Each structure stands twice: as structure tokens, then as C-alpha cells.
Amino acid sequence: MYRIPIILFAIFLLFLVLFEYRKRRAIHKVYSLADDQKLCLVNELLAPFGFIYNPSQDIISTELHAWQRTFGYRSLFDKSAVHFNMVIDCEPVYFDYNGRTWMIELWKGQYGINTGAEIGTYYADRILAPEERGQAQFHCVPNKLMLPVSMELYDEETLLFSTAQTHWWLTGFCVGKYSRPKQLSMELSVTFPNESMMSAYIQALLDKGYRAYDLHVRLLTVSYRFSRPHGSVPGLMQRTFARISQWENRIFCRLYRWIAQPFSCTVNRILYLYYFLPFAFRRLLLFRRNRAQKYRRRKTGFFRT
Image (cartoon, rainbow, N blue to C red):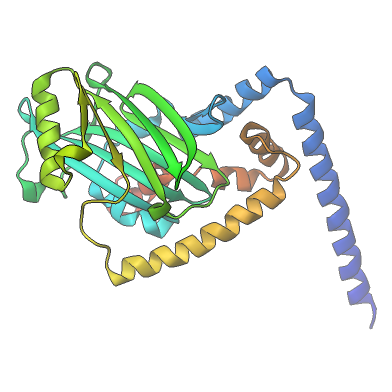
């Protein structure tokens, strides 16, 4: 009669012992590594996901030759984002230049348990009519067409990170931080190769709703602040999904910080999760583009998972 409760209690105690042993072993492994070893190892772990660790800002960002580059961009990625716990503000800016329609898109918000921002540069094969832009396939720019871009992400008045690079998809993600998109703002700049391309981009910003005094132009560089999208307002269902996703994101952020509390630096926390809870480590790195590609494969059936 009492055997089943006793067996269950014994199993529970065994689980606690193994859990504590695994935790202490993971902590010891992290502490035993030198700083350069940690950086090398964490970048090896991040590489298959298309990301790299930036120690100067303590953020995760996109690798220049990330695998996501082969997929390009479709508006489906943004429309499906909320279903993958990514609650983000999107600002696509379309403009025509040199026989093609270009798009520079901005994103900021909550990516699962990460607060982050992105700037992506893309182009179509030809000039698109305005009604075609939302359905068209855009390509990531090749190296020779990449633009120097920079961004500073603020949580209200607090600077979270600052990064700049000549890139096709500049990103930054603060791991384990929870934010609401509306409390985030991005100070950004884009440098163009000539005045013609810059003028086309400025006109697109003005057409989108930005005012002339919002933009700061110096030589071939355009700088401005992205705080709220100048686009359509999300519908009721979209807002409902966003609230549910943010509720989950807040819980998982707190859970992540509780689990990783032996450490404060992101590189140590990532390695700790890798040694201690590998499944949590993999979930941590499923950012927007990784999950969106899975969604696209399921919808089209072009790829096997």
C-alpha cells in the first residue's frame, strides 16, 4: 500500500540529487575556462544558428555570412512573427533606385526571451508596383552592395547597446531582458554610396510619414529615430496574440534569469545553459529569422524538416 508513494518519493530525491550534481558540474566547467576559451566556444555554438557574440556590448548579433542570407525576405516573416513569441515593431521602407525596388527594414521588440533590434537591406529583381511590394520576394544584398549602418537601442532613456558595421542585416539581442516594443526606440544611421540613392531613400521616408526635421543628413549619411511604426495598426486578433506571447515571454525571461543566476555575463550564461540544460540553450537561440524559416518550410512544403 505504501510502496508506490515511497518509490515516487525516492525517484524525486534521486532527481534532485542528479539535478544538483549536473548544476554544480556545469558551473565548474564554466569557471574552469579562460576568457578567450569562453569566447571561442560560445561563437562555435552560435555559428550554426547564424549568430556571433559581441563581448564589447554583451549582445548576440548576426554573423556576416549567416545561413539566413540565402532566404532573403518576404512579408510573411513579419506577419507570422507573433505566433513564434516575437512581438516586434516593423518599419519597411521601400524606394526605387537603379532599376530595382529596394527595401531597408527596421525591427525592434521582444524576440522570445531577448530584447533586440535589426536593420536589414534587401532588393527586388525589378521595380515593383506599390501593390506588389507586400508579396514580393526580396534578396539580401551581396557584399559589394552592403551599406554602412549603425544603431543604438534604448529602453526608454536607458541605452541597451550600440553597434555599427557595413552589413546586410545588422542586429543586436540582449539575452534574458524583457521589454515592450513601444518602450523601445532606435537611433539609426544609413550611409549611401551616392546622392541619388540617398535622395530616393529620404523621399520614401517622407512619403511614409516622417517629417523633414526628423531626419538629419550629413554628407551621404541619413540619421533618424525609429520609435513607432508609420504603418497599419494591428488588428484585434494580432493584438490578442501579442498579449499572450508577451505574457509567456515575461515568464520565460524570469525563468531564464533564475536558472542562470550563478552568472551575470551573457557569455557565461550561454555556456552554463549549454552544459546544464541543452534544450533551453537551443530555445534561447531561435530568433526571428530561424523560426520564420521553419514556418515558411511548413507552409510551402519546399523544404524538409
